[in-house]
Amino acid sequence: MPFLEVNNLCKRYDATQALAGVSFSIGGGEVLGLLGPNGAGKTTTLMIMAGLLRADAGTLSCEGRPLDPTAPAYRRSLGFAPQNIAAYPELTALENLRFFGRLYGLKRSDLATRAAEILAITGLAPRQHSRVATFSGGMKRRLNFGIALLHRPNLLILDEPTVGVDPQSRAHLIGQTRALRDQGVSVIYASHYMEEVQVVCDRVAIMDQGRIVVADTLRNLLHRLDAETLVEIPATACEQLDALTQAADRVEQRGDRLVLAVRQPDDNGASGIGPAVSRLLAVLDELRLPVLSVTTKRPDLEQLFLRMTGRELRD
Image 1 (cartoon, helix red, strand yellow):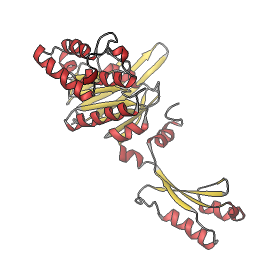
Image 2 (spheres, rainbow, N blue to C red; image 1 turned 90 degrees about the horizontal axis):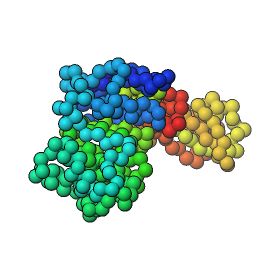
Image 3 (cartoon, rainbow, N blue to C red; image 1 turned 60 degrees about the vertical axis):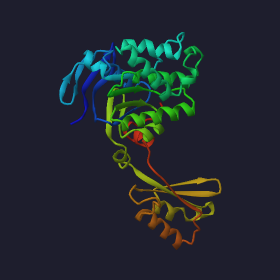
Image 4 (cartoon, one colour; image 1 turned 120 degrees about the horizontal axis):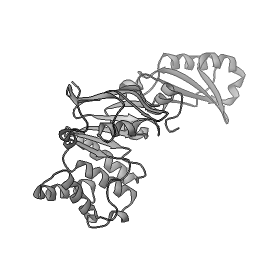
């Protein structure tokens, strides 16, 4: 049974339909990537899940039981790191943790211990007495992440957690997210960075124009696409173009080379040499055309999104 289910969420802002029947689920100790371009409806979905926005229609359920996202018990189990930094810039990192810890209802002794743990987790202990206004973008994101963890939630919602951060902070946040999953925390990781989602998430839900286009494990999603093998030969082979276009799915010239592209199911191992490629190589051998290189391009989420929606992921 899923830990949390989102069922047919709908939300309209005046004439704009922000959500048009969003449904997905997340298991316990799982990282679910919510992937989509800006304006797809990711933040609206997360705000409803966090109890900060009321849906026009739809329901939430936790372990099969109806869930009110505004209920205090649910909010105590939820950590939410919004896209906008929650920390107060004129307070220090430690002061922010103490403030939010009191809002979460942590007792003084537990709060002191937990604040020290969060400072260690986020790598901000050396700057705990510095005002947040002096922090870099990456440090602010790490503190934002840490605030969401203060009360030890079992569901963590991260909305674009690495926007505007340096590579070191990005790697740190991704590593901590995976560590939380290993501890049994369920994480919803909303992003428009395909590369991050592929690294950190167990399953992926692709969202576009207020709808979930597709949701599955990363492996299953990528198996929906064919791999593409590129065979390069000298451009002088243009004389044999008719035979080449019959043997390849696509032929294009790049400088002094011809690139022959062949699509095939992505199930032939690292070499990518399947029946379609074998047939092309046999044709080249028959024509006595030298092969300069053979490379296989594996499908990725960017290609899948383009296939499912007809537009680029970051449009």
